[in-house]
Amino acid sequence: MSMATATADKSRPMTAEERKVIIASSAGTVFEWYDFYLAGSLAANIAAAFVPGSNDTAKFIFVLFGFAAGFAVRPFGALFFGRLGDLIGRKYTFLVTMTLMGLATFVIGLLPTYETIGYAAPVIFIICRLAQGLALGGEYGGAATYVAEHSPAGRRGFYTSWIQTTATVGLFISLLVILTLRLSMTPEAFNAWGWRVPFLVSIVLLAVSIWIRLQLAESPAFQKMKEEGTQSKAPLTEAFGRWDNAKIAIIALFGGTAGQAVVWYTGQFYALFFLTQTLKMDGTTANLLIALSLLVGTPFFILFGWLSDKIGRKPILLLGCLLASMSYFTLFHKLAETVNPKLYSATEQVKVVITADATKCSNLFDPVGVRVFTEPCDVMRRTLATNSIAYNLTSGAAGELKATVNGADVSVADKTGAAVVAAAQAAGYPKPGDASILKQPTISGVLSDDRALYAGGILFILVLFVTMVYGPIAALLVELFPTRIRYTGMSLPYHLGNGWFGGFLPPTAFAIVASTGNIYAGLWYPIVVAMVTFVVGLLFLPETKDRNIYSND
Image (tube, rainbow, N blue to C red; front, side, top):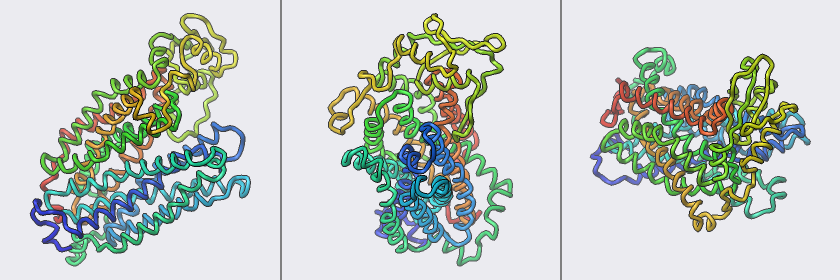
């Protein structure tokens, strides 16, 4: 594809070559996201297979640590592969990242259990998760840069918005595959071997993706730069060692990707966490509702990408952050009232008070699930939070620990909070599996149930905010950085935002809930981050839609 073609009139129809670029880049990225999300969706099965011991909670925490490790190393993958992408080219770099991701996923599917190979099983699993995180850190920047550099002027938002659908589509496919397997075999068969199938299928997806991407040529912008001999000799140093470029990365992070990330993870991941862990909805119903909201919402990525070509990237991104911040409390309250009405009422009517020595109550921040809490105050609060029981914490005398439910004293002799949970449930809190909790484990059931449709509508609104902030972000990041350091420059703020600010949102939100005793308090984290992005973006983020991305200046 020539430079003249790439900068042609934006009113012309999409060419066959451009269509092939978008399909090939998007398909490969979908499969990478699919691979990455499997570990979270099948955490319980992985824990049972690879982690020793009989403590189910410890097993689950270990797998969550593995999932978090994948998020933690994404920025390092962005640095490593971003540098390669600016040195040797976009096409070959994201071929490497795709291969690394696919092989790591396939290995997890074949990995023998702990009973077979001992501690090598969890060690290899963690290594595979680290490899997946590194690969994803390099994949997104390459795919987004590649598509943008093939796009005609004035249509980069629309073209790159197809890449923006891939994370959601990858999540949707992973949920769909798992649901299909669960519904087509017995629970015993799925737990024994069926859970491995989604991992093993990835090798087929890898082969198809590599074959498709091998048909592609190098990006025209990179090819032009290579022919002119204007490539960066040290992309990392140039991108982050010089203040004029490092400043752009900082603005991109705090004025763009940090807010985009928390809105995205709230709408897709924290919403699922809130349904299953806080509202105690069964996993099948929750996955169906999330999957349907994603299915309906995904076209809006394209709509907002297209719209960003008309009115700009900045106003859509910042409006999405603002709307999300202003409406999260209302939407999650309505979600709770719809899904678990007894819980919603109990949080207002059942008063649980914990009185404890303040010096014995620590913060409960545990983003990767490795802290061990031994103080009774901490253990009790985590127990209450895990059971979705709201409480007030008051400061007591040295060594004091007591609990009341609606003014009546409750024994804390076991120091775990189990008696407090039982008393709260006797006073009105529902137990897991309560008949009042929304449950429709089939698509037809969801579509014929007014409560399910109402809950799905709320989830769709959350996804709509996701599409507003995520649809234009790829084009914005590509346009912020010059060609010679584009892959490196855009990848780091994107993966710092999404890997750290977004990836650690669920455990951070849970820590806030456990510390405050308010089941909605975790929403303060995405609200504050999104508002910081709104303010920083409004003041410092430039509009980029009309920039010439073939310039090295």
